[in-house]
Amino acid sequence: MKIGFIGLGIMGKPMARNLLKAGYEVVCYDIVAENVANTVAVGAKAAASCKAVAEQCPIVITMLPNSPHVKEAVLGPGGVLEGAKAGTILIDMSSIAPLASQEIAKACGAKGVKVIDAPVSGGEPKAIDGTLSIMVGGDENVFNSVKDILLRMGASAVHCGPIGAGNTTKLANQIVVACNIAACAEAFMLAKKAGVEPARVLDAIKGGLAGSTVMNAKVPMMLQGNFKPGFKIDLHIKDLANALDTGHGVGAPLPLTAAVMEMMQTLKADGCGQNDHSALAKYYAKVSGTNFS
Ligand code: NAD
Image (cartoon, rainbow, N blue to C red; front, side, top):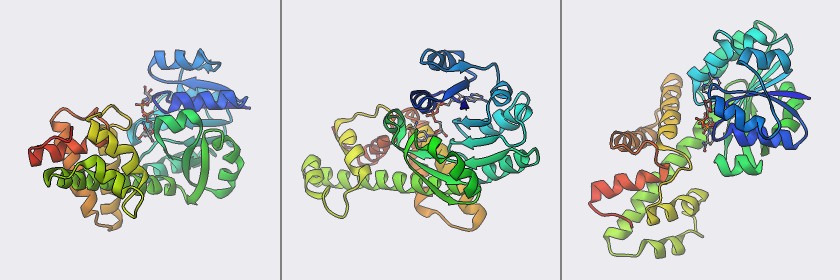
């Protein structure tokens, strides 16, 4: 079966590769020619545009940065919708605003193109391993018809509700991660300032109630002063902006998210937007006048 893949960046490239490994024929496109060449080198076929991908494939996957990129690639000139036939399935795996997913699905639905939103969690290592967590919104029958494909890229694929529910779930995930990283930075800076070795604090508490995947992955980075991404502050700002917009739209105040957003904005203004989000430690280093490392 031919699968179209649009957006071959940090995440899209290994995800497309896993589809190739599973024996699917992949037709790919990215606005950056080098990214297309990298995926062609491992067995994919190149297409000249998003439209050309959709003309050739009954299933098209998009893995793009944010809502405007997905709207442009799907609804814009030379986009997926121009090339897609009725019955085509579009799986948008980008992390975008739930409202944008709904708008895109509505425009596609008018041409008989079915859309599900299927953002992921797990980052580049799990994209490479094919063990992403995939959260899906949209028609459950459409989800079931492509579940096998999703499970070539992920260890789990959970149907969360109607279109946009995948991205709402992803925003919930991003709030928990952001607030957890900030709480870790705050707590470990307290230990440091109070004269208790942060590495010992980590050893002492990681197995208890405060322990988390975030703590295990991000606190060692903070203590080493290693902020190589990983997941960039700039991308997390994008997700928190979508969370705040969505929260305000549905009447769900997000005071913790807003506070962490301003910490991230401070870091971005300080030139750290391309750092890993564990660089929230740098914010606490600045306000407390003490480094971790
Ligand atoms: P990326 O910037 O590395 O890749 C995006 C790709 O899309 C780039 O290659 C870019 O050239 C291409 N692109 C942009 N506009 C396009 C268009 N109109 N047509 C075709 N190609 C276009 O981003 P990424 O890290 O791969 O992230 C993709 C999505 O996955 C984002 O929504 C991100 O939030 C989400 N995500 C990322 C991670 C991570 O750890 N990087 C983890 C989970 C989810």
